[in-house]
Length: 106
Length: 121
Image (cartoon, rainbow over all chains, first blue to last red; front, side):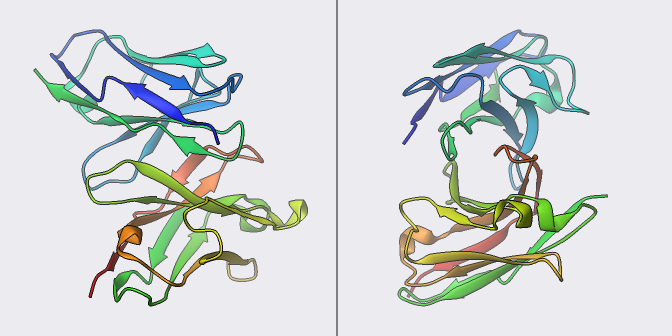
């Protein structure tokens, strides 16, 4: 099994901040990684796939990078709508999710 | 417009069974790789299992915690996905999401609204 570890688990930030979330895989997954945003009571929403490809309709302030075992999701300028929980997901071998990063208002 | 609508959730006693359905529309269901993902209260996302599309043999794979207890199936004539859950325990309490995979890769571009399942005596 591939274990996915996200950090931090909680992040406090202000509108306009640049925010970076890290996801580490227990072994190399090439670029088979997706990022999702989830708001309370809602289903997750796909933001990034193949580590760095922006899903159609996702705001351009979201970007992803990385390969192998280390990946990052960056929000270039945090907007009020971005306060949510973010999950990474590997799809190299079956599927598994990271534990999530909650982005809170500072 | 792609739609995934789950039904069948509810309260069940430990040891009991429940069957979830996911009615879909707006895409070619028979070729789609479909998964179930669950989320326990206040917890993260957990993949439950998947069924491949018809052209890929419609075979199934399951996560270790549910293997042997849960069965995923599909009715391509009705564009519907199922999750049969047996021998339920309190650890299975969660919201269960039906998800559509992109091609034959396993990330999800569409999710249902979720079906809550509570296992309690």
